[in-house]
Image 1 (tube, one colour):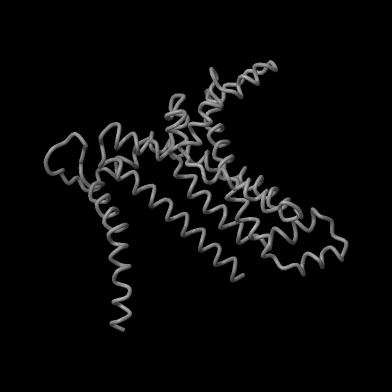
Image 2 (cartoon, rainbow, N blue to C red):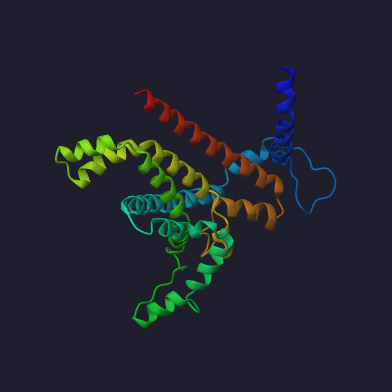
Amino acid sequence: MTFKHGMVTPLVALFVGVVGFPLGYAFYLSVTDYKLTSHGTPKIVGADNYVATLQNAEFWQSFGTTATFVAVAVSMELLIGLAIALALQKQRWASDLTRSMLLAPMFITPIAVGLIFRFLLNDQIGAIPHLLHAVGLDYDFFGPGRALFTLAFVDVWQWTPFMVLLLLAGLESIPKEPLEAARVDGAGGWYVLRRVTLPLLAPVLVVAILLRCLDAMKVFEYVFATTRGGPGTETQTLQYFVYQTGIQFFRLGSAASMAFVVLLVVLTVILIAFRRMEKAKRS
């Protein structure tokens, strides 16, 4: 037993150093009035930062903006990713080349992707608006009421391959017998997809949606590289709002409390999702 504990000790120490200490220090900052411009030991203010966060209308507005972004981006990634995965499953030639090309956007850093689309979609110098002007169309991708959906499109471009990867793996793991039995009974392609394929793919779909929602909630680079939260505050997401509070306005204590509120919400969503998955398995 002692030997086993000795083997685990380095891993526990690494976890405490890499994860535990930063989280503990961030929680300490969240209960203080610490600012980057202050000197000396910060004052302990207890739950005041958390109360201020919960009463901050701008924080909840950025929360709603992030939720809208996640809903639009992930739903589009799911639909497009499922369609591409179904097509790739039936592909018989050059499948490895096609899959490697589709996965390429995932390996570009998000900040680089944001900068690429910032110049591609810029109303003054962008190539895409220039082409639209040539055919008589005028569309400001980063204008009011459009900028958030443009950022969602950028996220779809980069992360749909991730959804394709998960769904394709799920499709290829589905047993062939139910599909063949449905076809023998004369079921059409749409019926097989709706009644056989999707129910068997449901666990993979839940995991894929959960992973993408959690990752999309962290959106920061696209906003930083393109809109900086504008026009107005239309694209001010949670991560960008926390960044502004802590780095631009120097209020690290308040920013830390906001980050922990977000963490609590995310953990609650994960807990609910996994409990529903367990209930679904039992039933």
